[in-house]
Amino acid sequence: MSFDEIIDRRGTHCAKWDKMEAIYGVPRDTGIAMWVADMDFQPPQVVRDALQAQVDHGFFGYFGDDSKYLAAIQWWMENRHGWTVDPSWIFTTHGLVNGTAMCVDAFTAPGEGVILFTPVYHAFARVISAAGREVVECEMTNNAGRYEMDFDRWDAQMTGNEKMLVLCSPHNPGGRVWTRAELQGVADFAKRHDLIIVSDEIHHDLVMPGNTHTPMALIEGISDRLIMMTASTKTFSIAGAHVGNVIIEDDKLRAKFGARMMAMGLSPNSFGLFMATAAYSPEGAAWVDELVTYLEGNRQVFDAAIDAIPGLSSMKLEATYLSWVNFEDTGMPIGEAIKRVQEDAGIAVNHGETFGKGGETFMRFNIATPRARVEEACNRLTEAFSDLQ
Image (cartoon, rainbow, N blue to C red; front, side, top):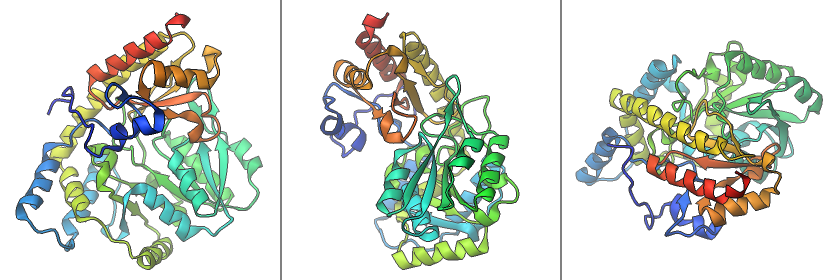
């Protein structure tokens, strides 16, 4: 397929396009949806063929032998990430928001603290709060447009009530690919405060050229406190499949998580398993390589336009397709900047405050869309802020 092909998704029960008017007031017929982390690209042909084969077969019963599915995950993690996974370590959840919620449920008690390095993906705080746990925000340092961790400050913030930290790696929304040294710092911090680490690595395949993602599982000495979470959904544009994996090496942690899964009666959606099995393949890998090259081109176009508008700055993406734009130096209240983006430019975006401390002056733009649409968004933003030129 061509990533340049524009396919109209309106009227297809697409949250990203069909809900932007109700949520953001951006007109459905003329607006540009750049909020939900959902790509405007069709999945690779190998995935679509796998799904079509099931439709043609005409039977939609319970999924049985999952050995090919588990083998596909093993192959992908070994070949794309240098991480050896035993199939017995793998649990399948209804996506990774569900996976996060299950980890909170299994490994913490009501009232206990769960740490987030903010600003970070907003769904984490939502499920933590809904479960009656305390959201503990450890704000990252924005060092010249690049997020950094401040463990000394965070050490002083701990009270002893914290039992878990949720790491977003690569980071959403800042686009950071954490270095091995930074990940070791996270491991040491967790050891000092006896924390379970839940590492959400859903964007680990979408890493820009010149950067290398290190799975948290490759950091030594933390398997007894580590929960890994991965998924094919962001990588292959199949978010609606709601299929993700919680991967646990430690026997005791795995038994505890498995007991909660059993108690909740959870089992996976067969269509998601068929799609993930097909995606984790040489054909899928070739498609991802083409995708990342295309996304890097979109990043360059978008960043050039944003950085040309006085007062706006975009964090340079090391991974993901989510551009994190700071409006602080415009000098205008963030409400005014949001009005210009949504009402004047007609672009639906995520508001930075929803990502927690440190996100208040930002907006998140999804650039995983055909380049012509990125260019149109850039033109609209340039016009909306033309008085700053």
